[in-house]
Structures are given as structure tokens and as C-alpha cells.
Image (cartoon, rainbow, N blue to C red):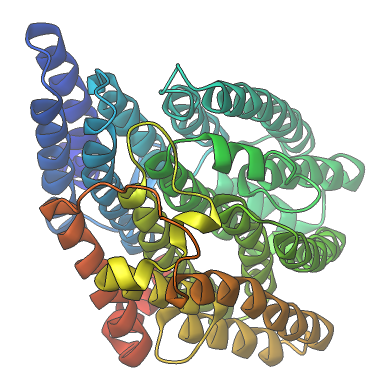
Amino acid sequence: MNGADYLAILPLIIIAGTAIVVMLAVAVHRSHLLSASLAFAGLGAAFGSLWPAATAAPRQVTPLLVIDDYSLFYIGLVVAASMVFTLLAYNYFERQHLESDELYILMLVATLGAGVLVSTSHFVTLFLGLELLSVPLYGMIAYPQFKALSLEAGIKYLVLAAVSAAFLVFGMALVYGALGTMYFGGIAMRLATSTYDGWLVLPGLALIATGFGFKLAVVPFHLWTPDVYEGAPAPVTAYIATVSKGAVFALLLRYFDLPGVHRAGRIFLLFSIVAIASMVAGNVLALLQDNVKRILAYSSIAHMGYLLVAFQASGALGPTAVTFYLVAYVVTSLGAFGVVSILSDGTREADQFSDYQGLFWRRPAVAAVFTAMLLSLAGIPLTAGFIGKFFVVAAATSSAMWGLVIVLAATSGIGIYYYLRIVVAMYSPAAETPPVQPSLAFSSAVVLAVLMVCLILFGVFPQSVLGIIRQAVASAI
């Protein structure tokens, strides 16, 4: 490796270095504020280093990593989401009076794994990045070790990760056995020649897609989602919904957008079935829930189904629609779970409808933010979610996927109902004395304000981010 290679991976180096610095700081002096500040500063430095790194892109850094505008865009997205997580987690865990320093070390390692994942061009870094992302999440989910639900959620996610890793490794072994290479570019070249053993390649691709399916929580690999979302601390739930799923979908988009993979049409038939099942099951099961975090969990399953619709579209519009939708989903999910984090006290999560009954009359600003986030998830105009869903439909219709469009439209209509249930509860007078909720910290208020601005900006002026997205998608090697 030379200087240009190190410059290209500078954001990843800074994130790894920050994890080490926070670890040493914890060993010298325990301070929740110090650990959170160092983590936030390191993530900010990593975000700022994207511009120097872009001067060295596009660049293949060894056969393992590819740094281009696509990978840098997604690194920026996961780093920005991690910065939001840091601010939300500090205020959340400060109220619980726990020694939470190690949480930021785990988060930094997971963010490093997400950065490696979106930059990978080889099966080796795919597996390493996925494990770097997954293993810290076990501890983050179960961090409040005095809560039985958190411990249960952590164990369930541990089992999930082990199963998905087994599927991935077996699938990679089959593809390597058939094609003789683990490099994505080499796989594309061999698939394009049609001189490969389809009896190994197709099952291998299916097993890899199954491993991704567990991470994305699409049907039928979704059973862990509501329990983990409910049991995990609210900021950690936000992290799983945004950083973890965003990084995996970015990898999925790069890996399955290889030219030769489209020759395996049966794989994309599988994606269509999974997309339909996810949209239907996610929205219908959300109707039956009375827990806000479980509603958002099933909602996330439906949103992954929407993304799979655009994912299958041919041409440049498909990847553009997927990327914009992911940006909108990250902003919206961080805002929604951010409100849950802010309203949660040190003993319990604010995940019951009673916690939101009459919220507008107690905290109008927080209720307004949560309303905007829910309307964005529902795809209501003037929000980023509406523009994202519009691009998904446009991508699907451009490829004549009319069946998927019809299912998407019908299930989106169902989704409006359970989002409005929460909105109606917030603007209704409280039937009983509401639970005491913590005061709004300044950093949390700033986070919600920034997310609200992004939500409206991307919804009213989508061109503000579309140009960057189109350039990033076009640069993917």
C-alpha cells in the first residue's frame, strides 16, 4: 500500500483509531461525558476526512476494499447516523446511572465494520466487516444487563447472527467452488461468460441472499425483529434500524448489481417473493401491535420490502431510488427512535401508547417532530419518505414490475392506519395522569431539530441530495 491508499481509507483509519483512544481513556479514567465526547469527536473527524479521501477515489485498495464515491457516500451516511446515536445514547444512559463507557467502544467497532462492509470488494472483507458490525451489537443490545428484556434480545440477536453467518459462509464457499475467485470483479467476469456450474452458483447466491435476509429482517427471516427492537435500548434500536441495515443493503446493492448476477433470474424471482411477503406481513402484523417499538419494528420489515422492489429495477433509476430511500429511512428512523429515547426515563422505555397520549399538550415540539417522522414513514407529501416512495414506484414502473407496484400501493395504504393511531394518541387529551418523563436535553433538542430540517429539506427540495446520490451510484465499480 502507498500513501494514496492510506488517504483513501482515512475515514476507516480514524474510526479504528478513535475506538483505541476511547479504550485507553476508559482504562485511565472512567467518565461517561469524556467517552461520549471522544467518540463524537472521532466520528466528526472521520466525517470530515471523507473529502480528502475523495481526492484519492476511485481506488482499489488491495483486492479487499474499493474506495469510490459510492462507498464514501455510505461511509458518510453510517458515520453521520453514528454521531446522532452518540448524542442520543449519552442522554439516555446518563439517566440510567450506568457505567456506559464501553458502549461507545462497541459502537465505534460496529461503525468500522459498517464502513468496511460498504467498501468491500472481496468475500474476506465481506465476512470480516459483517462480523465487526454484528459482534458489538450483542453487547449494545444487552447493555442494560439488569433488564430481562434486553438480555433476551441480546441472546436472540446472537443466535440470529450465528445462523446468518453460517448461511453466508456456506454460500460463499459454493460460489468460490464454482467460480474459483472471491473477488467481486472476478465473480462478475465469470458469471458473464456462462461457463460455470449453475448447480453450485445458484444455491450459493441463494444462501448469501438468505444471510443478508436475516440481517435485513425480511420475511421469512424477520421473527427476531420485534423482540430485539422492544428489548434493546431505544438508541441501540435506532442504530440497528439505520447503520446495520443501511450498510447491509448497500453491500447487497453493490454485490447483486454485478452484470453477470442478473443472468441468474431465479434469484430475482426469490427477491420478488420476499419483497411481497415483507410488505404484506410487515404492515398487517403492525396493525395488531399496541407497543410503539414493535409497531416500528414491523414497519421496518415493510420498508425493507419496499426497498427490495426498487432493488430489482433495471437501469440507473433502481440504485438511485434505493439509495435515496435509504437516506430518507435513516433520517426518519433516527428521528422516530430519537423521540422514544428522549421520552424514556432511567427505569423503562417509552413504548406504550399511554406514554404518547396527550403528548402534544405536554410537549408540542416533540409531538410535532414525531408526527413528521411518522408521516414520512407513511409516505405523506412534503416529507423525505414521500419522495423516496415516489422514486421506488418510478423505478418499479420503469421496469414494468406492475404486480410489485400494486402490492406496494395497497400495503402502503394499510401502513397509514397504524401510523395515524400514534398521531391521534399524541393529539388526544390524556385519559389519565401521564407518566413522568425526563426533561429535554439541549443536545437531544439539536439532534431532533437537525433531523426535522433534513426531513423537510429532502422532501421539498430532493435535488439537494439527488445529485450526490446519482454521482455516487454512477461511480460504483
